[in-house]
Length: 366
Image (cartoon, rainbow, N blue to C red; front, top):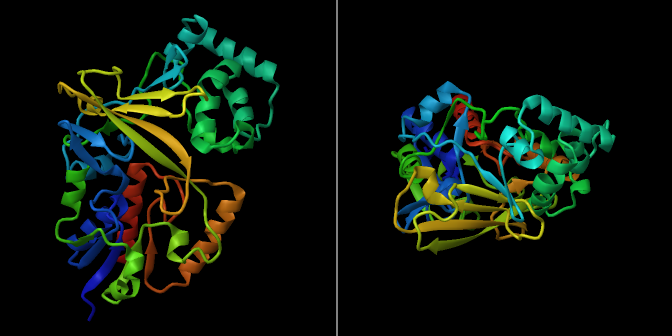
């Protein structure tokens, strides 16, 4: 008899949900986390009495009532609605692209006027079968929105010219012909009061937790203690990069404290000009409608991922997609290995999708 039913590598959202459900079913879990804290990239901590999203802004949103009810078992959520602002040099625009954006750009006031302006620019571009981000943008919203609000931001985010990026990257961007600045068109959204860390801690109650431990430093010892391994780290790292390294984009954060109650008036400002080195400025207190005397602002700098840095976004081009599939084939041959989460599955996940995937996964293995 081994000591644990599941050895869970990573104390992020997927691992925490899996651990909670397995523990509730009477299974014994050991959760191993290389960082000094639980929560993965949704970890939050207090700075100047402000709840700071240390690894970037995470706004919970979902269309699925059952997922909303699930997370509310572990935290009380506020009614924060994501309404970011885009800044292009000395101009500001509302996001997502909506009637407020179009009115500011062109002086139009009705949806018909905005549609006509976009149609005019789309026709002038002459794109019929978009093959990259630039062509997709020109095909969808025309020249003005692309040049001011998409091109520079996207090129900074991915470290490549827009003409070198696949068109599908842009298909997530919403365009609305209403005066509505709500970025997510989901009925359920908010931020846990007090941050995500207490929610993760509740999910992990009943599990044994080992923090500050790199799984690969003690791999054989740890695996010998459990019947099955739930792995949420980078899939290529699990196999020691034997087929080559997958590519990611990483992020670096520069956090500053300002001696003012309100620095930018909104939680998230996107800086869309290519010349500005960061993509976003996040004023954390606005996530929780804070009134503290000081404020904390994080500037988000996209970077090329290098080993030792935190991987954030998979680069889902043809080369990386094929390589990831080869690693998945290797994993399928590993007895009692369970993969889960954005790094192990090499795909972008919203938080609600991570939870849904973890619930489905643990149900399968129980």
